[in-house]
Length: 432
Ligand code: DLL
Image (tube, rainbow, N blue to C red; front, side):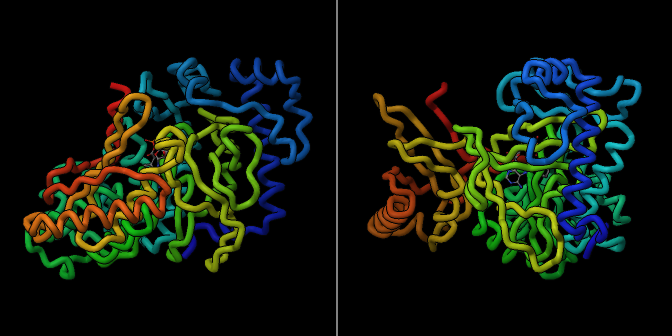
């Protein structure tokens, strides 16, 4: 199902022409209204009026999170505050938040993009959508809310937290669509199982999950427990919020809303584009945003382009799931490891629960990693020998698939922290 088939399936040639025109007007807008870009363009001798082809994109300067911090709060806005009708902020793990603004038109485009993603999963006007993302400065709650309203669905703005109440409402309001982080979906499922709720009796059909990385194995776990179609959707406040990219019901990669963004995948070291299909950092240029346009924003998120077309017929560039952030990468004995790789392996091992935590410490000059894994009760209370065998098995799998040795500790079910928003998988004690 499409929300806007003419756009979503438009021939690449037309799309590229549209992108070029929209980029030209964005460059003009930022050069005229944002001193930060005016200065950068001047330094690089870029004439915003002389931009004739998308091939020239690489000449434009990058924008980083630091640039946003240095221009806190409104320095990168391209319109006066009287035209801004909404403000959000991304918390960021370190230091100052980034403030992002939207004009009326930006909000309309944003809801349309989220509506596309909901529709691509299968959500329609007669669906009941429970939004368990936080409402507030975080873009998740409001972003998905307005998109779901635009589809015409009945929206339950329950916000995050209060798991028992979420479950009550899932049952009583006959929710068909759950919207939250994947880790919270799993927590809801596990809590319902503990409460002996008959999940088959619920009306749930769809789950749209995003806001944090999750593995294919985690998707399988959620699908099996909740009996739904579970799609991934991606976005970030600095670029817009949720709705930048999302999967269709084929669940094989995320369609990027390319009529609103130009996306590149670059090598974070050399800053050059990677070969098609190679892993790299996503870089976004917004081409319709009025209040807060960004040129070549370095997301630090890592993903690949999927060059093959999707059977759904959409022509927008597809990307793989985001496997993590450049700043989440662990370097263990010289080997680069992402938490998601560890998740995939753990989910695949019989007897382990889908809850884990990765502890990184420094011993002398070396990083030491310990993976804490919850195991089912029967194993935890089993003989020591069996426990040892499981630990050895997990270590071996991690060693062969990641190429590094890590410590593994089994912990009792429900002892690791659960999250209502984004899960925190890595505890880095090196920085403390
Ligand atoms: O998390 C926007 C969002 C809300 C997207 C709800 C989808 C659903 P921020 O708080 O600014 O915005 O965080 C953005 O979260 O740079 C990624 O590192 C990560 N992220 C978001 N979606 C995904 C996803 C929202 N589907 C940061 N897979 C991004 C992996 C994701 N990581």
